[in-house]
Image 1 (tube, rainbow, N blue to C red):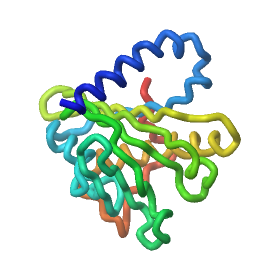
Image 2 (image 1 turned 60 degrees about the vertical axis):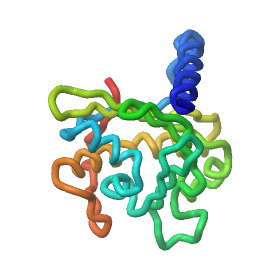
Image 3 (image 1 turned 90 degrees about the horizontal axis):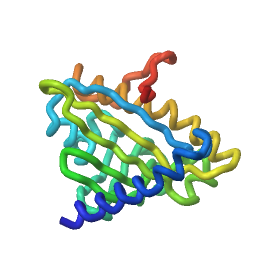
Length: 194
């Protein structure tokens, strides 16, 4: 029941902030929003995002996910890098509503040390049924600060989430990602929310 209360608090905060953010120019809101329709069951897509076994099929070569509030949401992209530089070490789950929403902390890649070692941004991933055996996945990346390196990281993730969503689609249409030869997204493809 705790996760329902945490999620309710987040949604109430978002609602109360809605009037404020609607009056701000779009750049000041600093949100990245992406969405994709996946040809799979809700449970399969939910499990892909919320279990270590699922995440390695599309998100990263190694994962440590334990679906509890405050549990780890760690994805390891560079397994040869020193500890602390392999990916999302130390990141936590913020809230979830089973089969509906997942939120977790997020950091920057090691090549952006100021942002990586600063306050975490966060992701909200929403799951909606979309016809028979299809799921609309919507991602919002928030918590952005101002500054030159923050701007570079913002642009980096605008493209990185396109790659993640393409790999999610590929995972359910062709099978799990082969991390020795991962799927590459064509330059002109984007999953921006209209």
